[in-house]
Length: 343
Image (tube, rainbow, N blue to C red; front, side, top):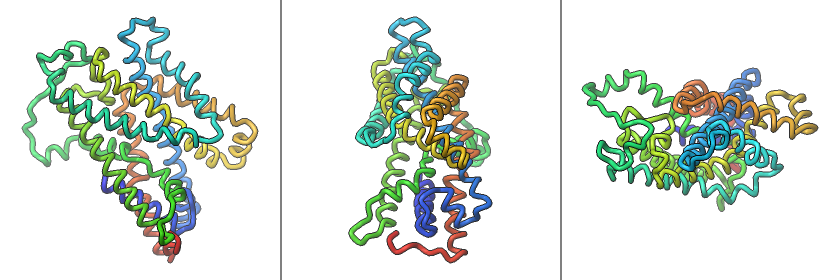
């Protein structure tokens, strides 16, 4: 969390030094125009994977909510839920010209994550999923624990540790939007943004780190090696509090989905150049439908969210969070690009 916040702040510093308001633009002026396609591709790929992950989570959670109702599979299956949700909810939201109406719902994301963290803690301590617990028989997989006899070095050497680091690089990744957040942040009384941006970044990433740690630790202590990539899938479909948790995360992701999708669309248009600009201007509906269809098709064929998150973190997250921000600031300093007075 600390390193992610530091990288977030460094991106804002790079934008301030170069006078750019995009990740690629800052890279182009600081590092070189010939290589700015590298962060452009990484940002686009990470945003696409973010939308795929959202679709997977929504499909899993909503299908589990519908499971106890005894509805036919054509209505309640994971595939049907994802297709129906995309066509009736996500498409209209992603076709909006402005996301301003969704701003008021951003607090739902925070509240839903807080509730999920509290729910995971409760189930960890109340014994509902222990060997003699009331809900363990209804869980998709029985909790599995085994003693670990190795030490710290053997833990670090375990391939699973590298997977965890890759997942963490994805968990804290919002860095492709750092230039936009910095640009829209109101300056302080002294007319500068840098101090306020540092405070906001530290608070945001620290809060996220606490919530993520609670959910990760609580979920593992409840289910052990049976923990799934999306830990909410471990809880029984008949668990009332788990149903509320799934509903909370569904509402949160539905309102957040257009934010990430807009980034996907913008990145693609930028990568395609004039052809992309013409498509966005003349056939915006076709562009939106095509992107949503492609994202949903991929999500329908993927099941393991943990592997997807690890892949995204290893291939793109580590670069965008840890490597590129430091490289941009170092190159900007070497080129003599100093912070602007209003930064």
